[in-house]
Image (cartoon, rainbow, N blue to C red):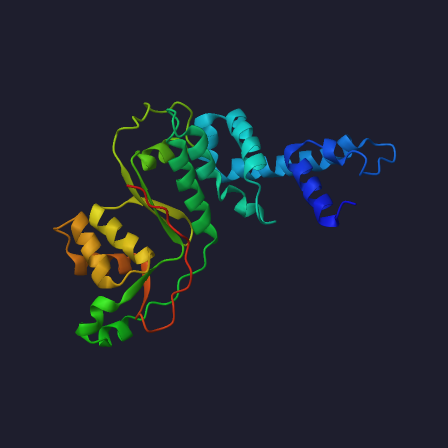
Length: 274
């Protein structure tokens, strides 16, 4: 006798793949074949899933074409079904899926474009940062400065890529005129991008090597001494105090704590790639 759990798993698989054969004989037809009944659910799930992918990855849709995105999205639905009922989470593993599918092709850069577009979506829904307590930081004894753990704005993400991601993204936004400019060479330069939500828009900016290395350490909750070392390795000429002041003023660094205080709230996990 089939358990309820096994029946539910079989139904979920049939809805995801469109193959209702394993359910024939277990679905009351009542004048409508089991395949057609399951097909209605499968079609609704697929269209909602693909529609969400198109809305989440508009630059990829333009680069590869809508038909391509729907085709690869169908395979993604089959191989990586969403683990929540929230449609916002649909694209969570899409970049990894593209990396596996396109890693050895001339479209390998699609994975990094997907990482950027997913970061954009994540910062849109991230929580607001806590207030930065500058007065308390100013009172901290200098001997403890190296132990301070700064916090990056939770509505921010870092993306590193060997490709000119910002140029690709800017040239292929949905509002751009088709064929408006020359093709962007994929070897035109690497990217160190900050994706940051402002009050009325999401800002994308290229960061200098030192700033990016510094923020990378901050995003991983490393103490100031370690973050400073990492930053100076990337840019020996970096004026670290001025860099920190600049990042706080830009509301990229938005908090701090000492290791023996309460842990920092979880923030979006930025993806780094050298």
